[in-house]
Image (cartoon, rainbow, N blue to C red; front, top):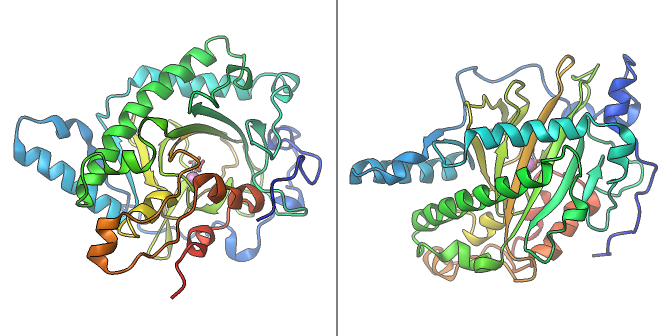
Length: 358
Ligand code: OGA
Ligand code: NI
């Protein structure tokens, strides 16, 4: 695959500026083809992704613990998405992290522009994913940064404002890594592997973690566009802190789109492509997208827990033996994420392309 070019193919337009301009019509570049537009027909209002009380993993009662572990297994198999409450991350920190980022996006444009990103590493303030000239774009701006490994963590690439931003991100990252490690153990056991299997396959203590903060400005024509096009997350596992007021995340389930109703102070957890590969597709990364809103902006924090970037990721040997065939060819995460960095969000086409020839 060709390497990433040094600059964006077209001048960058901040979606927030378009939104603030007050125009009633969105530029054609954001108008999705008919089949990709958010359908106004929503699925049954009472359908939602499972909610799991993680506190029960530490119950004194063996049955309660076993039941929680089993609920996580079903959520991973049936949905690839679930919410967790009682997860150990401080609710005050969650609120502060979201609000700090909201303040960042509301700071003056020249402050934000100092962090403008490039397609080489994507770190900083961005407004597109993919470098295809003429591509139809999504209705969002974002900020992307590395939290781990330490060699990639660079405070100079983090925002300066608000003044406690760096401190808050640091603490937020620390608590989310603890939560992610906990979940990796449960997933490993549920797959019939040793408790440390997934963490070790990800590189042990050398895993990667990054944060993508999404800012979805108000949109005058929300039925024509998307805040984020359908995709599966390329990494290992995602811990999403959604907006506390405005829904928008939709998960694909049996062909229809389900709008997630976030529970208070919950994280939305989803399986990424690397766990689909490691589990030999016992767990699948699931397509999701974001719809936008005419009267409310939305902020979300996606924390991506990823394998160390230079180790080949392939199905666990035990699972291959059990199932009789390895479904995927090995690939490093460095190589894998070039797909989305070049082409932008494209449903599940990336992980499909890894399928072993038959
Ligand atoms: C993502 C993502 C969902 C959201 O950043 O990969 O899917 O609700 N975000 O912002
Ligand atoms: Ni995603």
